[in-house]
Image (tube, rainbow, N blue to C red; front, side):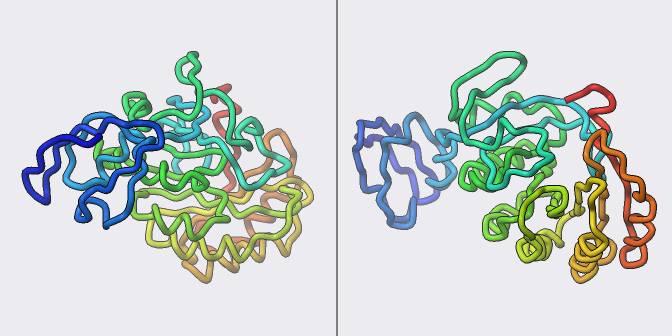
Length: 284
């Protein structure tokens, strides 16, 4: 049942009490005239729009929240709180978080476990750093939850960095306005063991180019010159000043890695070799 008082079309104060499978018609100016299935929503809300009120009961599949230093890319060494999403649309050979590939498992924070999915507001008081890194898995697979979470993080005046595999341009477009930094992976087939994804990567880079973005390629000793050339070509087409991070697979020797950097610098202005620093420091 729905009870409450409506002070104006801009302010809503109401109690929504859910009954299983109950469907209510809410005034059109609150939600665009759509039918709302209320079995997923409950509690007090005081918001200027229905959509804002809805985030409090959004649920997502999250592996863990923790605070550490950023160990990869152009923000390396900076203190960040990490939100690791569950679920991935890829399965790369070098993946170091294979437990996140499926959207299942427990949520872990400070050594304590909770069942998934977790409510959005359950995460907010755990975000203690000024910079929030959203990683996975692939966060863009849970686009509605991600959008709601980012809205709340921005209201907390925190910077947001998303780490994405660069294969879901339509989803990236929906949340790009929330992001301060985008870490965009280009998946190199000789390292991932997967087919080429250049078209998807190029589309994602075009979307992210308006933000502070860098491209990361994870490589092993089998990397091919044409793979590096293709990555550089796509970046150059967007903006040759976008940094390219060459990241060797952890504890794998890349004999020609300096030559790879030298070759890439013929096309791009900023090419850096950065390993996974946190692993060498024994951090997560």
